[in-house]
Length: 70
Image (cartoon, rainbow, N blue to C red; front, top):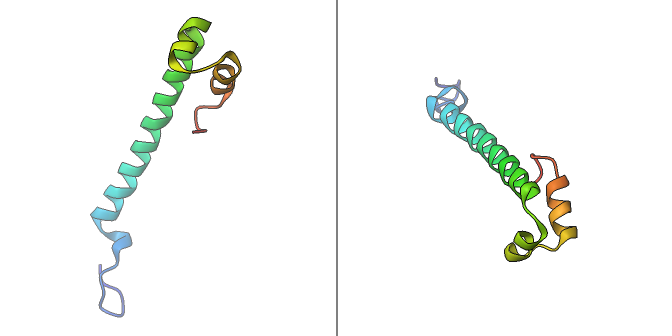
């Protein structure tokens, strides 16, 4: 769609909508991955946390974060 000035209105084009959908899908996938990783961390014992470089306090802090927090 063109505006009154004759320039293309990107809000109505498919590329902007595609980027917006990709952005949301990326965000949802990130949330899903964080949730899965934090659940896996919760199933591990202290020795595995140490192998990953976490002490108990850091592991618990990471597990307690909501999925939307990076």
